[in-house]
Each structure stands twice: as C-alpha cells, then as structure tokens.
Image (tube, rainbow over all chains, first blue to last red; front, side, top):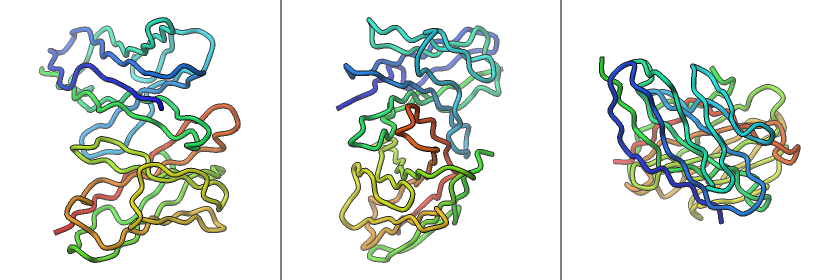
Length: 115
Length: 115
C-alpha cells in the first residue's frame, strides 16, 4: 500500500523567506503526485500536480515542486513566502485501482508566515 | 470555489444518532470520493462512487454507508454516532479516475460534532 510522509509538521517562516516542504512516498508503480493547500477554515485546494513529463512542475501562487523518482520525493518550494501563505499543506499520492485511485495524504505541514 | 458543494456546513448531534451528509459534484464529474479529516487520523479515504455505483472502499466503518443518485449527487450516512466520529467530512469529485489521471476537486466540507 502507498504511504506518504511529510517531514515537517510545523514550520514558521518570516515573510520573504524561502520555503521547502518535504514529501516522500512509498510506492513502486506509476504515481500521480499532488500538493493541496488548506487555508484556515477553508477546503482543500489543488496547488500543483505531477502526472508525467517534466519533473519540475509549477503550480498556482508561485509554488513549484520537483519529482525525484530515485528519492521517492516530491518536495514543495516557494522562493519567497507571503503572510497569505499561512495554511496547512498536504502532499498526496493517488492510490491503486482497487482503491478507486483515491488519494493517500500525508499528515500535513502547518505553515505560519510571520510579518 | 471548486464547484463541489456540500451541505450542511456544520452539524451537531448526540451520540447514538444518525446523520446524512450531502455532496454535489462538479458539473461533468462522474466520480465522488468521501474523506474524513480528524486531528489524530489526518485525511482518510472512506468510499468512492462512480456513476451511481460503489467502486472502492477505504477505512469506512460498518456504521457508515453512502450512495450516489442518478443525478450524481452523493450522500454519506453515519449512524450510531460516537464521540470519535467528530471530524470534518470532505467530498471530492473527479471526471473518471480510470481516464489516466485523477485530479480531485474538494468541497468545503461538513464539520460534524458529536456530543
């Protein structure tokens, strides 16, 4: 079964600092990878996704992620965070056919950006 | 706005009771997923429906059931509620996970509090 591990549970950064959130998955087959963001009191929004092709994917709001197959990683990055990036970030990998390709989520990383 | 709607937003009920949560997928999406988000378990997949039929089950309790109607809206029924069932319940929709990719769009969630 697939699993997703997010290394940082809580991250505090000052505005303009660079961000990198770690995500590792365990699955030997073809994977689709996602990062979702959940702003306080809101629903999950898709930040970016990787299905195939260029391993460096760009998403909304200046976020990007790099798929490194050899490391089973899909880290999220942003060069300069803003206060409005304060949110919970979830890495996810799609499951197998017998799970209807449901998403397996990591535990999430809570990001607090201070002014 | 993802295009996925869920009602109600909040639900407070007592132990032993039964509740029904409702989800309408995005226009054109045939597949509906239900997820539970709690502090201790994180985001967990419960069940998936595709075009009216159950397709996959995750960590769904026997006290919980769901269905998808001909108009593609879905309902999640939770019965014999326990305190531990208090959580956020999200619905997500996608076009067809077997189409090769599985980008899911999440609704705003229903916050269930069992007292």
